[in-house]
Length: 585
Image 1 (cartoon, rainbow, N blue to C red):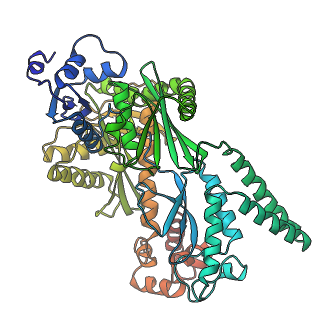
Image 2 (cartoon, rainbow, N blue to C red):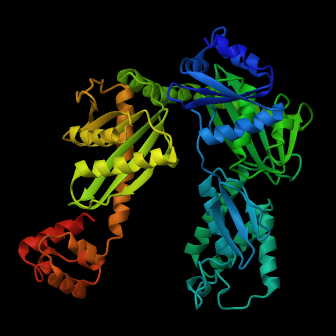
Image 3 (tube, rainbow, N blue to C red):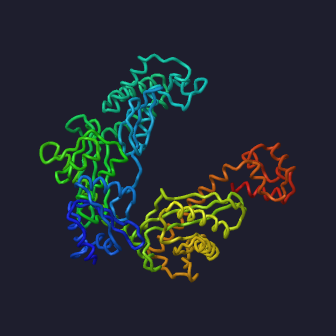
């Protein structure tokens, strides 16, 4: 396989890109020696994820670089750009919550999530906090104990927080710098690990309210103190110094790599991140790529401790911090702790990860076999309207069995009437005409939520655009549950076992596109004015519309009226139609 092509590959460092028969990049890798690495895929026996990836390779390309470092940086950029299905990807793109103290223009404390941490001298970040609830409780507690700014904007007068002594009235009053600095010093000291400041302040308030016989408030603060002590107790492990650091280690077995990252802030273990995934190539090289991608979306600590086998020289070129390979001494204990957690994660989640692979890419492979095509990407469409108004469509995308939410799209339909056939034609044309113009990625399969009518509308548009993409319809039964997969060419129904992973996969797809479209439809119709609502009811002309607008003024007021009250302005049938319409928006 590829015997002649491999002869032409040079013995130089670089990146290689594996393509499938649909010209989609399915894997990106780097190598010190391109010829040796590429040859290793097609000689000898591969197993697991690697064997599956090799079975899909239609051809490969490569880019020669001047050094291994250059190839590593290129590999990271190519993975981010193409998101290949067989590369290790972060299990999600969410960021962890931080507590942010804002110095200017007014002192303020809040929970934030940043995908990209930016340096700002007027904002201090503390965290990350794996337990978002604990972070919110801490912020709530500090806001109760200190009169920080609570509201948004600049009101013209003091608000309720000022009157209950939880704000100094920054919007309208001049606050002495000394007062603000004192609060700031105490809050920052607490967030850096000096919990005695807040505990003592809480005890003072508890005693005060008890003496005032305000036992309810005293009990409430006592519960806050108890919760804070529990949270802090979990972070009692003190380390070598008060610095911020992450400790990374891993455990590899049975083709699966478990990664554990311990977050240590101000000398305390505040949480961890873990993941487990199947590996296609050399696991240490894939781990280096994973670490690099991880820190492009999260705060970078002052130090990162790594096991000796991870190449810190390469990582230091893409992660701007101090990287330390640890082999002995007190810091070795931290690495062993991280490795122990990685091993436990592997033992606990190996079977779960394999089952997830079966439910996602495994089910996707079943669908590929059923339809006789190699499926990587699926575009799924659904339409929604209410009595022919507020027509919208939604498109969700599944890539290798998983939803790709950054590729979802919403469409407000120009044809605002109950015509599912032409609605489908409009959205399909808009989606794929634009894809052709912008040379966007095309799917191997289009699924429409509906039956033969929607399939025919889709086929008509694709033929006009000269696109040859497989189409299927997902029909529901009388109980609105996924029932049939209909072939777009023969219009026949596939016989799928209702207990199979494939059937559950199709159900997830249909539920997801329906949820996404309905949510968008609710957004659109909630913005409708009273005039646009009345326009949708037969029997309400300009004269009646003006009377109703004058009488009620808003959709909210209309919705609060009974059918009998509406009959004072409208004939019974028209009033009934309006009443039923309003109940559904």
